Length: 133
Image 1 (tube, rainbow, N blue to C red):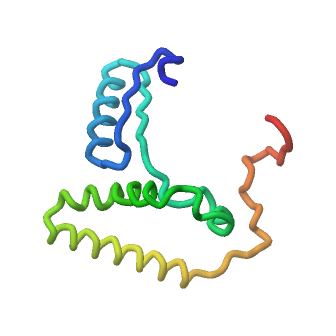
Image 2: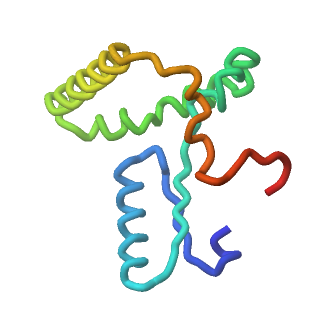
């Protein structure tokens, strides 16, 4: 797609955080040096369904081997394997603590007023449209 716009492109294993960092850092450096826009295609694997309804309807649309291969390339595990085990344990504990605190904060908060569900849904002065735009 980048070629259609006359711009350079780079592809990278989007499951590997270090590879993504390297490719995007190079692209940013070229852009900041005046090289114009660049497309970075980070190829990833979607672990779960597109939406929750898909889980209810069909879970077996991908071969088990494909799912197992995709899960074996989890970016958290890939990057975690590069860390000293003690550092990894510290990071994991810190993340768990932050998540626990966020859940506690959310559960302690008041429920929103249902009458405000549509507030701020559209930009000021705009109304809902149907059909094409």
